[in-house]
Image (cartoon, rainbow, N blue to C red; front, side, top):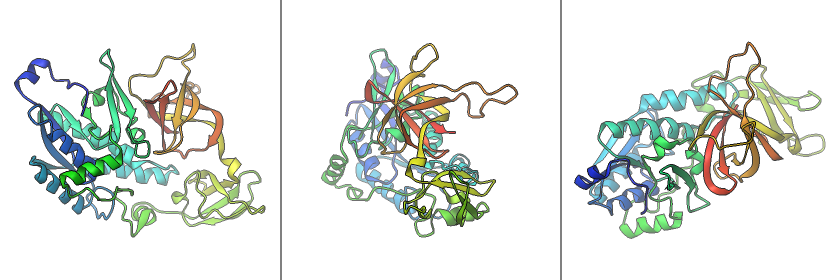
Length: 386
């Protein structure tokens, strides 16, 4: 598989193979990623690593005991060394804790993105550095391209139905120069066919769909209830402010939610347009009430710095608001400075995104990925909805 050159000097590469630490989750994608790298033995020295992230009980996602066992067995099949790295404390502080506190404040965090940000492409890269590896590989469906000037670009995966560039849109030059995505140029069907051809035990294993630290049989409500108080709230109309009934726990409601919101007097379904946890209030309205002209992003990360814009720093982009959402045109500009006396955002300078055509509101805490409108497969960066 073609991949950008390693940051290791050419003289070093002449004396030893490039050493790659491949993150093996126990799924088919990372299994095939490891297998493709093993094919390059002689120029690539491959070692597998599974991250132990969740210290609690799990029956889904990529943190179960069965997943670790599958990764170890695949590594044995491939004839490579396999390690298990314990990052439980980091996962708790950077992923689980913020997930809980976010819901308690009325936000809807994306734990998979924060896991990528803080664990797979931060702590794992640090561990790889200490162990003398030149690069880290994962089974993500995305691609890295090195431009003629040596800068790196993050591109969508070849399979549009499995593209994972959205959950990697926080990666910058440092990470991309060290990352390999061996299955990014393959469709999912091709990945499974390759796994079956090699006789890998994960060839027909279903994809992970759930948040790994939440059990499928108890769900998000039980998980949060064990960690924070949940409070009943009232539903109010977005225009009149009339009381329309109640919800069992305002912390479990998210912007855009339809389920459990009932119908208006005209028989149309109601949607959540805002959540105010301190006031114990959930605002609802018809579908058109969900439309917004834009949003503000904090925790902004650029693949290669913000694109050059006009005199005010504004530039066009395509915004994608969910993992497999439809990108739509927008204009991005630096956020205005806070009013005098107000501190700047804790997450650093943000950006304001104006939609060309009004779109459905995006829940605070969710991530928006930005793509290049002149090359829609190319990621510009991302931010978290304020």
